[in-house]
Length: 430
Ligand code: HAM
Image (cartoon, rainbow, N blue to C red; front, side, top):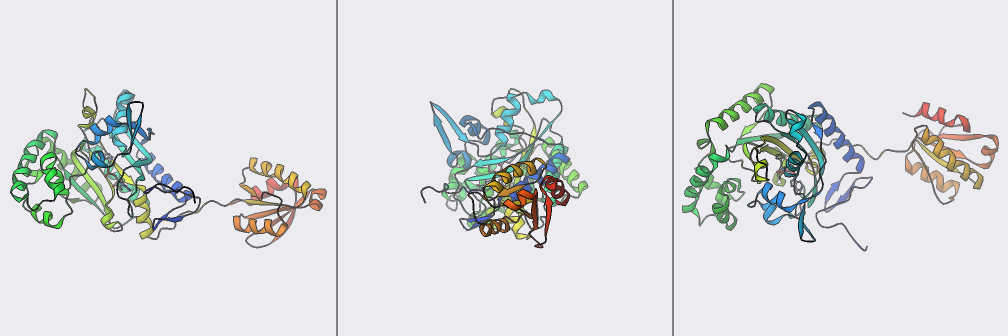
């Protein structure tokens, strides 16, 4: 084989197939997932936004943040005539760019946006982790109301409920406001510095650049240090605390379960106040099904003069498929044609070709074999297509102005005038 998909990427084929030890579902299953997501978004009055896959490198570097793994080592960079672009590693910074660029605040009120599309990160591929992966997500821009936070979390919950996914936990934390951060960082540095010998090289670097990320460590030795580490809750201001309390009250009122986790910090720099992650028993080490939070400082980080309070989340579709498989949810398969035309002889072939278009205009999905194959080969192809019926057209039928309609499931056959086929078959179609 001459060429193959790039490591960490995959094709979505008409049928499910196996790629790198994982099942990649067929296109019909992806469409179904996207449909369930779109329906839920509509019920929450989120409107779709589509942004380019290519974005300015600066936007991502400033938006996602220079100390993050994404910006430091995972960006796919495209250089062209002195410009640097990146394949978007996430969609929050692009959506904020679009909001600012098109003055979407002028539409009035808070903007409820959602997206579905591919993202790119040069991570080490493994189960549930790809280099091109797909996210759906929401961004609610222009409000600092805790109900906005509760609304996106309720939307996230509603979507996983719609898929019938159980065995999930929503971890919730607050990171306070940007102004609360320096004192917390200092406290973390002071706490971890005497233990520098226990810290990994990565954590030692983080100690300087972004000590909050040490709270995120998976390293067992480091984790033992965390029990006594300073807690953000001791550093946050009254406004951020009131916001967090209000959010928890709203979630309690809705009956949306969550677990408070003071160690949840997230790997992107733009978060303020609320952060959350939806974990699943199905994923284990593969990480979160979905994650998000509030990012009141992002607009100004990417050049806005005015702050734009905002909150959102993104969910990985590949990981959703893992959870669906774990729950043995039956996924839709590629749709089958209504009709498979079997044509014998040159005249029938010519008439059949026109008949296919007529039946399609009547709304039927019609397939036929190309290349003048034998009756046997065409009937085999009809069976393989799993069409509801085969319409058989030979020279004799053509002369009589009829066709044989064979029900492929039950093998029953009847004769139908050609000019009544569209009517007869649309009446039968499910
Ligand atoms: P994130 O946590 O980087 O957040 O990604 C969100 C979700 O995307 C993850 O929970 C995971 O399901 C999926 N994901 C991330 N990386 C990969 C990968 N390499 N392979 C497969 N799935 C992956 C964000 O992207 C933020 N923009 C979320 C957000 C929206 N915050 C506010 N608004």
